[in-house]
Each structure stands twice: as C-alpha cells, then as structure tokens.
Image 1: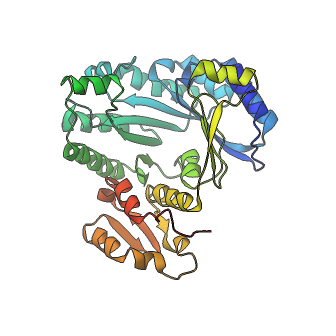
Image 2: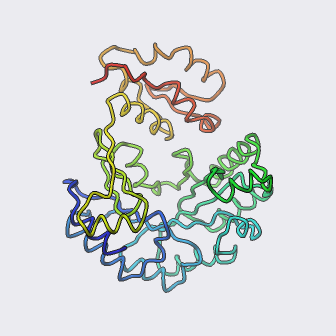
Length: 350
C-alpha cells in the first residue's frame, strides 16, 4: 500500500506550484506506519513538491500506538503535530465503541508524546454517546483539559444505517441520545473550554492561541489541496474535485497498471459559492457579506434581510463589520442556516 501511495504522489498529474504548508496523515490508522514508511512518504513528497521549512505535519494516532519509542520515531520522521483519538475516558464506553485502548492508555499516550518532544498535540472527544450522560461528558472534558493539550476537537456520535450502531438501533439495542441532550453537551463544552483558555474557532475545533489547525483552516478557506491513498479527496481551488476509490485492492491495481483510480466532479459557479457559504459559516470569522454581492451593492443582505433578522433575534447569528457569523447556539444548526442562504442553482454567477 505504501509503495502505491508513493507512486501516486510521483505520478500525480495535478501539481501544486506554491510551497506546501501543511501535510496531514489521516484516515485509517496512520499511527501503525513504521518510521521507515513515513520517511519514504516524506522523501517522495519532498522530491515532487516544495515543502516550506515551517510546515505543519499532522499524524492521526490511536493512544495504544503511542509508546515513547513510537512517538520519538514519528517526531524524528518529520511529524510535528499529533491528533490523538481519546474519544472518552469511560472504559465501558470505549469497549462499546470497539476501541482498543483504555483511559489509562489515553493519559499515558499524551505523556509519552510530551516525553518524545511533541509541543503541538490535539485530542479528539466524542459527545452524545448513549448511556454516557451529562456528568460523564463533563468528566471527559475535565480530564482532557487536565492533560493540557494545545488543541481539542469535538465530534457528535452519528448513527449511520450501514454500521453496527445502525443495526443496533434497528434492533432496539441502542437508543440515540436526544438532540436536546446532545445540544446541551455541546454548549457545556463550549463554555468549559472557553473558560480554560481555548478559542472556539470552528464548529468542532478549539485551540489555544497560536495552535489552530493550519491544515483545516486551508480546507475551509478553499485553498487547493491534494489527497493520496484510498478514499482521498483533492481540490484544485477552483471548480474541480477528485475522489479516489476506497477499495484498497482496486486502488493498488489502478496505480500499478497506470489506470485511473479516481472520479472527478466539476462544480458550477453557484455550487462553488454555496460551498464557500457552508464552510465559511463553520468558522468563528464567518463570511464577508460583500463577497456575495456580485456587482449589486448590498444585494446579499437585502435578499436575506428577513431571515438574518430572525436569526439575530433568536441569538443564532451576529452581523458585525460586514461579516455574518454564528453564535454558539447557531453552530448547532450551522448547516440549516447555510442552506437558507444558498444561491439557487440557476443564479447567474461568474
């Protein structure tokens, strides 16, 4: 697999001429990669692209993979940021989610990463976990904050139909957390993390000053990016997306036989603008209204005056200095608000 990914990097017809500022190893279990495999991928990237000296290089890691020796190897291989999937500190819930680690390993993983020399660590938590409860969630947050990470990401548990959780729900073996309880947990987290010095800079992400994820910021800002490996996505920064096939065997076969292992999608100008609304509203900064006027001064705000006024009265959005941004409660319905602001597909945008 690693050789196929390296070959895809070498053979990619889509090149980024500017310097590479972020590299992200994510999806699957990249913390199982050996130091030698990481060095091979880094060497291939550097041979084909210009990587800036201060690039942010993130590796997603499972706690059970982060011995001091492994963490040191990752650092020596070129990783300078770790994203560790803690998920929860309640051992019964970890077993329920089929995680291989326990709460002790989570704490030990962070300690090992610090001992190895990592100065930029992000921890992932999952909220709205059935039978975990509000108190269990608060304990998760407090224990996470006590580990003193630079960054924390929160994700609500989603029950997808074609998963084990989906089957359990159909068989009435699982009761999904009510939306109101999930919302309470999310808002509790915002309050507690802000009090602990974390800036809420995107729907799911909180960082100390100077430690916001540069990689994610580039994604939300529409910067071109290239993805390599099964299931990876790429974007040219304009109107073309590329999606690699997810099947490992078919991916490797396509690479080795120099056949296309991806599909492409062309975005219309309207789709592109709507994506900018969707991703922009996910950030604390929000969207700049004038970017969507298209030669008709104040047209966007006038077209949506009633809706924006309603959202302001409900304390969901803020309109300030030409920017529309979401408040804490607004983040709970970010996609719904964005959808109401979308341009119809027949809109003439150039």
